[in-house]
Length: 377
Ligand SMILES: NC(=O)N[C@@H](CC(=O)O)C(=O)O
Image 1 (cartoon, helix red, strand yellow):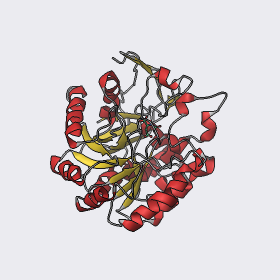
Image 2: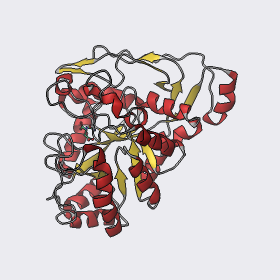
Image 3: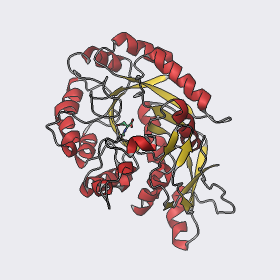
Image 4: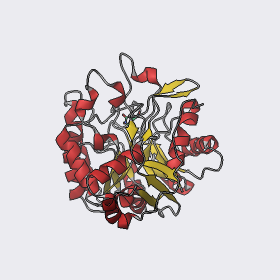
């Protein structure tokens, strides 16, 4: 159970401000409030067991839907397992929540084309996730031979209009960790879409200018990218600021400031190719603060506040709603949400930690004060 969560959420008598009128109101100095279509999270790790119980209220209170990552132990490799995991998630939801988990399958060298047909028929699986074997948390069972063993599956995905979600890093230890995304684009992604131009691909959690340029150069509607809060506001200095900062360690690892700026420009430009995917990835504190710490940042609490801050600072708040709530469902061919949330320009303090049965989670920006408080309408 969460003990220390103190998300403030009472917003009274603040003037309603339509996003389109925002610039005008900003000039008058009135406290701002945005009303936007409820966002979805197109890249979310919910885990299972008591960690799932601990984190799901946070995502469910802000987001309408979430693309649920399949890198559990053991991974969600079949439609059967995805259906069961979905039931577990639905049971863990707070009462009255209408959060909808959109399930994914974990691609392996032995996934069959029949499995893709089953996934499509199930009506609950929305994508297949490619983890190059060894690239990140629980990716040991991932793909070793994409163009050989996986080709029939990828061809079936084209037929079933099933998107491939890509963890875009090569795993060759000889490749510098900061170059792994670029090398993946050059050696895997570009050849893949040349071979299967009709395959829908989401390049997950983009971290480099190279990825941004690549996605922008591809055919709109076929290749898109999710963007995390951390890759918009942190650069690689944050991992080492004043000492090693394990809670800022994620994969793909944070990059140089020039890359961060390129990602900010891309998402705030209004391009439809980029949409919200938090990659919120909780790990119990001791698994982060140890001699070989896990990669992953727990950002479900703070994600909306951070996205809003980034768009505000870029003078692009009028483009925030499309990034958060339209571009994702439009790419997936799903309806946009009809309910709304509010973002109120009001300071709130992020808890230092979140306790649950097996330990604690340290959230991104623990103990810091953020602006832009999200709340349900
Ligand atoms: N992003 C991370 O650093 N970690 C993710 C896996 C992933 O998406 O790479 C996790 O599951 O912990």
